[in-house]
Length: 358
Image (cartoon, rainbow, N blue to C red; front, side):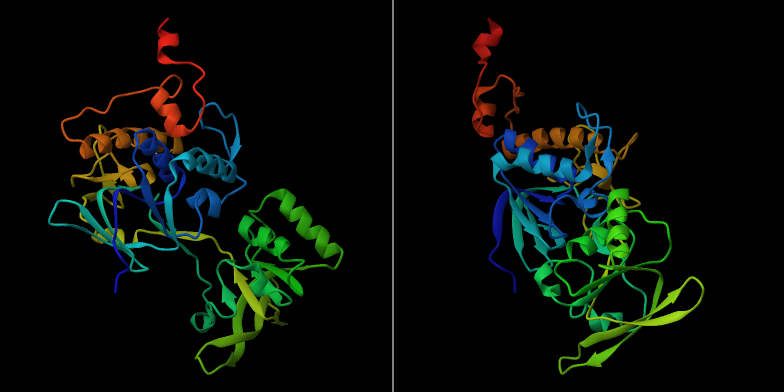
């Protein structure tokens, strides 16, 4: 059974950089948006895969960290009070009898909207799973692919799998929460920030954490009445072929995220491979009121760059403004001088249009 339907002008699917900037561009035109994101936080790939990665091609910012970019985009969008719906994926998209769009998410939340903007990168992200027999029975009870509540791991013996930023960041953050922390990575080559790796090695030298090189090859535990199986130990096979048994309470797996087009394959707009084909005037698909910006769209000359997605978001916003107000041209106003823009942004107006003209 669906929750009460939310009626709105625009739904943005995806809260990565392009989706967040889309909120801003719509807001400047007086349009409020609801945003649906499959992850439990904004940022998309930038926040999940490489939060500390430097980005060099954002105009006027010689260098900015990926997470810092996300944080700034959230601040920029804040005046327009967007409504986020995290941790859910759009399952169905269909036309209504009155030519609007009906969306239903994995949490049975229904949306009725005049316009849909897909800003979902290359699709929803799913964690890369540990491929060892018995994983499914332990998922969510003693095996986890994310940390939603660090207190859940308090005083537990935990093992963290992975060699990227997420793995090392959480291992270091949980050091003072858990009873013990062991990091296991398949090789000596880590993808995490060098500073995080140095901190990990320092804690290991001080016998405050452990680092093992190898792969988990077996899980062992006991079943309870709910058919879930709690972990008691894992087998770790090192590069020299020796298998050791390691006791634990919780296993945290951070192998990265895998993009999945998922239900998008059944959405009505025409695609070229895994991207929605759009025009370059409105960034609208062949379905009226259905738009796509960022890596998920395709047009001749398409370049998968964040700055390109920002441009696409701006033009899509103007197109939607005109869609919502048929026959009325959306006027271009500059944030530097427009009193209306300043009112919407909630900032003082140091220069009026009259002063600029004078």
